[in-house]
Length: 478
Image (cartoon, rainbow, N blue to C red; front, side):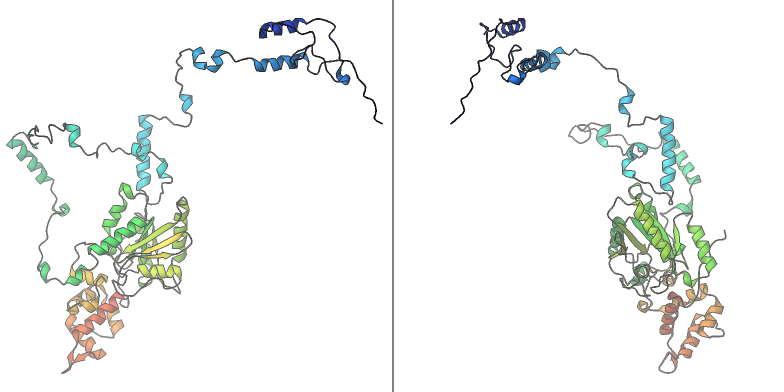
C-alpha cells in the first residue's frame, strides 16, 4: 500500500501589490497587476520551499541587479564618438621613451669616435646592423649628381633639349695658364701612377711563365674566397714580408662595404729566419693588422694554439651567424695549404714546395662552426723584375728556359759564407764560374766533359726556394 500524498495549500497574497511592483509595472507598461506574483523578477515573490518561506529566494539587491541586465545601454555607449568633443593633446617627449635625442655637436663627436674605431684593426664593431650608419656617415660630399635633379627631362633628353655650355676651369686664357702653372709646381713625378718606366726589353720577349698568378681565373677565385669569408688571413713569407703583401686586397678591406670582414696577417716559415727577425717584423706589422708567427708542420707546428684561439674569439664575436668562414690568400708557395693541414693535423689540402699546386678554392671544416677556405696563389703586379719574381718563388724553376741567368739574384741575397758552407765551394769568380764548379762537383756533365749549367742552376734555385739556403730581408730598425 502506498502512502497517501499530503496536499498543502499554496500561499496566497493577503495584501495588494507593493510600491516596487507598481513601479515595475509602470516601467514595463503592464496593464494589470496580479495578486499572485509569478515573475522571478518580482521582489514580492515568495519562495515555494518551506524552509525558506520566511524570506524570498532572491532579495531586493539581487532582483535590482538582474533588472539592470535587461536595461539597454545608453546611446553614447554604442557610439562613443557622438559624445566625444574635438580636442588637441599637447605633444610630450616622454611618449618616445625608447629614443635618444642628441644635438649636432654630440653627433659630430660620435661620428669622429666611430670613424676612429672602425679604422682600428683591433676593434670590432658589434651589432653594426642596429646602428643607423647611413645617418652617422656624412655622404653628402660623395653623393653623385643626377642629371635629372639638375635639369628636367624635356631639357635633357627630349627633342627640345638645349645645348649646354661647357664648364671651363677659367674664364679666359690667362686664368687657364695660371692654374696650369700651379699644378706644375705641385706635381710630383714619384706619385704619378700614369708614368711608364723605360724598359730594356719588350713584353713579347718576356717569358709567359712570369704572368702566372695574374690571370682572370685566379683573381676570380680570390674574389670568391673574399666574398665568402668573414675572416681573411693573408699569409706572408717571413723572409720577405713586404714583398709578399697584396696592397690591392688590403685596400679592398678598408672600403665601407667590407668593414664587417677582419684581416689578419700570418708570418709563415718562421723556422727559416732568426728569432729576432720574426719578433721585429711582428712588432712592425702589428701596428697595422693583427699579426701572428707560424710554422706549418703537421707533427710539430708553432703558433697553432694562438691561431685557433684567435679564430674562436672571432666566432664568439659573430655568434649571430651559424658558422664562421676563414679564407686564406697570399703569394704562391707561402704555405697556405700547409697551414690548413697543420690546423687539421692531417693532409686535407694538396700541398707541395712548388708554386701553383692549388688550382681552385677548397672548403675545409676545422670545427663545428668554423670553416677554412683555401685559395690559389695570387700575384699582385707590383712592378717586380724577373729576377725578383724567381727569388720570391712565384714561378716553377723547371719551366724556366734559362735558369742560369737568375742565379745571380741568389748570390746577391744569400751571404757568401752560407753558400760556401752548403755546397762546400771555397770561392768563385762569377755566377757562371760558380755553376761550372758546382756542376763538376755533383757530376752534372754533358758529353765531352762539359758542365750542365742549366740543370745545376735549377738545383740551386730550388734549394733557395725550399729554404736550404738561408736568407731574409732585414726589417727596419725600431
